[in-house]
Length: 401
Image 1 (tube, rainbow, N blue to C red):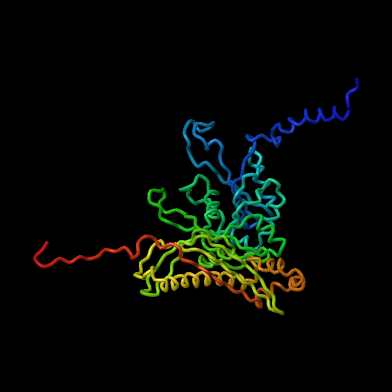
Image 2 (tube, rainbow, N blue to C red):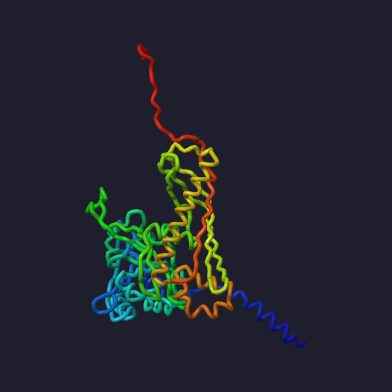
């Protein structure tokens, strides 16, 4: 009896299905032959580009592994630096000195030096875009000085330097900009905003030496057409966080209208909407942000139970938020950089009108369009204490103790 050919093919197909679930190595290069770059540092050199890659050291990661003798000595990471006419040549020079093949599959941070940022970061983005193993969600930063100063920073709270920088974006300490964001904006004009790092000397009791280089954030950098133009202060950077919708659990202080003393709040549930409108030749961008505020401390004797006083405090927070947002917008407009992508909002809402506005958008953005910021803050929680905690003097009648 002849077998049914279609049935026979079906049986063979079903029998082959388990083979598709069989796992295997995705690459012919063994893990033991790879060197995983965690961080990429790029800066300007006298003869081109200076590239530094940060690698974890496998023989120092776990005590007792080969080469450690049972104890862990030295840092579990290292830096390798080379220079070249371009980033590709510097990369090849680093690879030629290593016994393992470099892979960018775990690269989570890219830091760019100030001088190179002024010349333009397009070559760096070009290198990243053409490297198939590079993580597109890697965070980008700019330093105020030399990027190699970062290699001198002591690692106190984390195990690897890259983890510190990742946490800045994750905890919304500063603006969070990824390689994906930069690549998208590059194809739309190259206007972007990157977090700015500051490295300064600081006393660290218990460390040797006690005076060390300390890493922190210091505002943000404004780029126009891929080149660094201006810097946002810390307050302006916080205004940018509001506009970008990246603000999370931020502390803010305002002065009481009763005695001028500070009242401190924690901002929660912040959300921002950007809506463009066109009336005749006038383009208007309306930025509306809403958030809740929780009282965390107060030096003032203001009565927070009084609805009128609470409204005044809410308005004080709103004015401060609007001031910070306006400061960030004004600085970006003076640089001629549409870092908040207002043009894209106009394109999405008014595609026909955008066809005529696109060619002169940069000039319109810098000088003619109207940008309105509106903050709506509601004080939700004031705590269980109605009055500021303070020591009260007690008086004793004469002759009594």
